[in-house]
Image 1 (cartoon, one colour):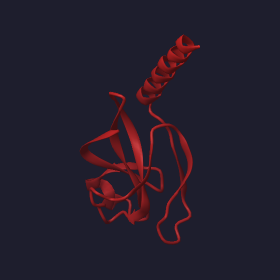
Image 2 (spheres, rainbow, N blue to C red; image 1 turned 90 degrees about the vertical axis):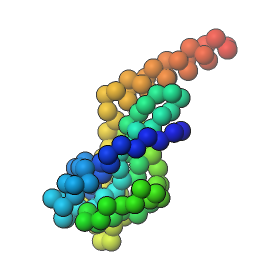
Image 3 (cartoon, one colour; image 1 turned 45 degrees about the horizontal axis):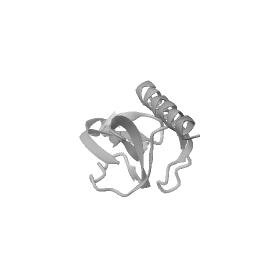
Length: 116
């Protein structure tokens, strides 16, 4: 899976998705991950890269921060790992990514039917 980076957008434990220059507006939040464009089987998709450890919102994480998981589909109960933070958030797949996943599923199904 190849990753493309443009201007970075961060996903906060309070549910917002903001650019680096907007982080100062959310002093009570923590950064749990960032949005990335991921190329998977030639398709460009938006994924949420969840960091191994959350960051305070006054710190822009380094570009090479360790990622726990990249989420393309829906996910529930993503836990903020910042000290004493109890927030859990939900990540929902975008419409374009959902359509791409459905197309991949249909293609996979067609191949399996041919093989049977």
